[in-house]
Image (cartoon, rainbow, N blue to C red; front, top):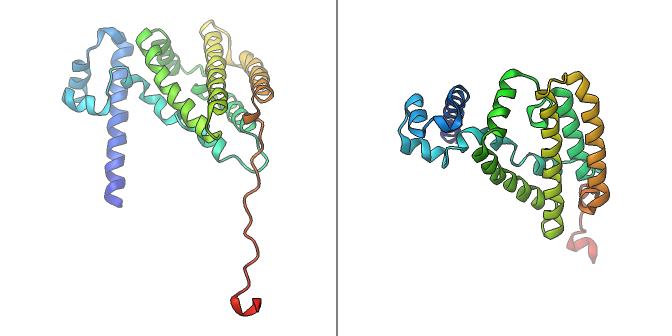
Length: 224
């Protein structure tokens, strides 16, 4: 078991290191001006090895989103008793705004802004990002119970998160300070998740209490 853990850590380190090298090159020269062969050479691995980890060139950048693919689904599945899915998702987004989490768009760290410019300024990256969003939707829909209504609700959640983050990022790019944007971002998130809850019953269902074990059944001797 320890060997498997070590192997997995090495794999994750490879993902991170190669992705970081690639993003550095893309930021320096432009996404379309850097070849996969150049990334492989900089990472000191072969092209076949690179493609085993990253099936497409765009994945070298979008790997940073991989850890967030199932986050919404996990929050819904693990929400405490009495909490609605929309409430759990709203709380996480609001805490992200308070912490300056890049996922919320409300982050003015220069490296993060440069990454977002690379992402939103490269059409192939924007197109590839939809595959990650589709996987997030599928995971969230499953956590909401599956079926068409759950998929519709999940699609709206992912869209709301994307639009809120994009609006925050654009305001920062336009020169507005984070301190000025944050109150508006908090209010917008509150409205958006409130509308989701009103429109989608799947998002307004509180988590039921955990099943409590019943009394032990009497043994055969006591029942006679």
